[in-house]
Image (cartoon, helix red, strand yellow):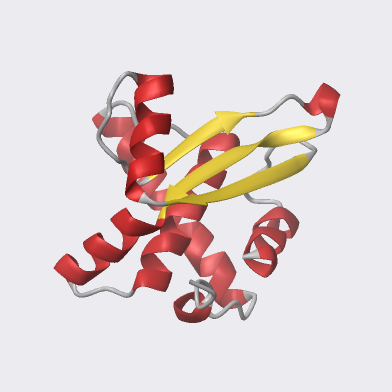
Amino acid sequence: MRRAIHALDTSGRFPVPAGELSLVVLDAAAMGRVHADFLDDPAPTDVITFDGDPAFGAAGEVCVCADVARDYAAEHGGTFSRELTLYVVHGYLHLAGFDDTTPMLKRRMRAAERRALAVLEAAGVAIDTLAAWR
């Protein structure tokens, strides 16, 4: 994942605030608690992004749910690694200012996700093996 984030950072296409990026991989139970605590919804979700504070050296935090990625990939014929990578990319794009709260913004987010995945592929980042550490 470090190579993926580096590729996105150095592409210059998705500027995020300066500072440290925290990436947290959670199971469904832990993600449900985070979702409940911060968004009043106890259901596990795929990704939650928290803005950081560059004054304190923090770009933000991206929390992704490994269980949701595994289940979604199995249901839709994808790979766990690609799905989890998409969640990380999605969270990263939130830090870069993209949103998905309306249909129009969701279309822009999906287009940005495709561009970001293309950046990773062009950089030689093997998306289908990124999450092999699981």
